[in-house]
Amino acid sequence: MPIKSSLRLAELLTSRICHDLVTPIGAINTGLELFQETPPDHLIESEEILSLILHSAQAASARLRFFRIAFGSAGGMFSLGEARKLIDDYFARSKMVFHWKEPFQKDLVLDGWGRLLLNTVLWMSECAPRGGILHIATPREDQLTLSLCLKATSIILHQGTLEALEGNASLQDLTPRSVPCYLIHCLVKEHNRKVILQQKPAPSELFLEIK
Image (tube, rainbow, N blue to C red):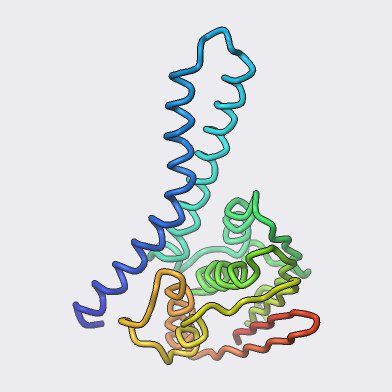
């Protein structure tokens, strides 16, 4: 990849990570300020503030671990079980519900599939801002296919995400929101796989398959 393109991609990924970390880290900072201002004898208020700080710290930590694998080189050889744990932690307090289809081979390590799983889940969750149910069928040794079916009251395909997913967007057209889709496209292309995407308006469903 040319240097200018590499810098553009690095800028987008940095923006995406910072955007997702601003809220929990800001909450930690606010909580610490409130804690300093709270009188020592106000036990209930202090416990509530400490709970806020703890939950925010857990959220920030979960997002950092998620992005390290989804966006970084460490996600190349990563087990499906480890990827699932990152997803569960990242979305612990979200409106998304996950149904994992059996058999789920948690110890299975397949080059690139862990990162594909994280980025596809990240993108599809953002297509349902009000929450929804995401059914996930992960690859197996005898069937290298990743299938995700999102069911929600409202599904939104944000501008530029489909173009990035299909490889029809230039790096200059990408945004922090669409960069996970670009990574999906790059990983699929690298491993000579293909993406199948279908949407049903009523009831609202979005189906993605990589094989």
